[in-house]
Image (cartoon, rainbow, N blue to C red; front, side, top):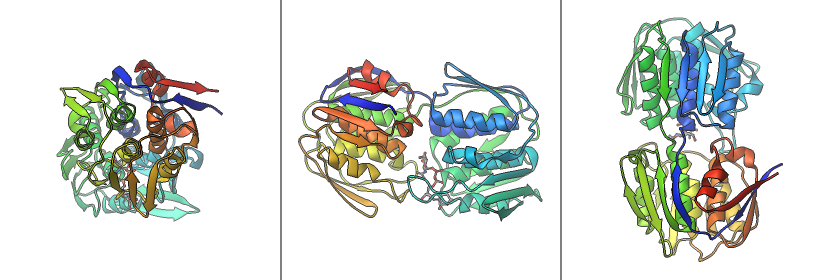
Length: 417
Ligand code: UD1
């Protein structure tokens, strides 16, 4: 099994580009099954989650091809409406296939996605929304058997602005001849990107990016070409790495508006931040300062996915920073590994208190989830000595060319097989 070897305390210098967004491309790939023509998706990162999604598309009867950041999905007969459990379990986002398959075939069979390393991942909001849209759902031996019964105009009020539930509603509602309104919808930029893709295929979605979305479906989907938005969490990870290791870097090909809570926190920590149209220039020299409480919230609040990488930088700040995790139950598993590197972190339920230390020290640590794994790399880049990180399958779910990109900034990082 491969590990990452990182020899830290080398300031980072140079320019690094941000690849396409994982959280955007996965629902977009699911949406391609609606299309009878060819779909071409550009700026698609090479990630294990993308490969798992392409396996599901092939299982559903599509020919899917990946080359140099471009995915081409060829039209084909949707011969199957069932996603086998082994594929469902490969990635949590597989649940968005539910809305897309139902829109395409009127039926879907898939297993519950189950819990994951971040704690329980219920899908009650997805299911209650689909029921309101006229889908009959029964459960048999852990499988969800879904079939479209009635089509009517619907107004759905989400009790929480769930990203996945909003995506599932959009993916089903865009394929039925009715108008659907979603109140308290998720406002994440990835929702706007999905809406942009679906609109290019011929649907009419208004209001994506706000809490109030109107969807008018179609039964004829045009072939479509789409460029995936930049990955704001990958951008936040590179910025956190500079905060931890020091140096001067231009993080490019991103949308700084998507990062505003992260940029505010880094500026408060003493980093010089200069945001351009699609670049963020960051300089960190001198010791970081602690930040005021960081509370993860739905967009446009501080993203839960950036909590771990920013915590790794906060471990080296002068003073105390408090993190409150409001989205997922078990999202501090990296804290124990950071403590092994010399960090001073106390976790109590969904609150973590970080008293900054002047130095972290390299040791053997293990990634237990995607962003927690990235956080260990951020900490290692700022640490004295060599850190060995195992559990790279987690990091590979969300970062394309991770070590190559960091090496181009001068980091001493190697994947050792
Ligand atoms: C979440 C993040 C999203 C991030 C993604 C990948 C939020 C609001 N969402 O999206 O920004 O890109 O992870 O890491 O930050 N919930 C229910 N019932 C449901 C659905 C969700 O109780 O049917 C709860 C979840 O348990 C969780 C919260 O709602 O506590 C957020 O869920 P949701 O936005 O749906 O999660 P993801 O779509 O995975």
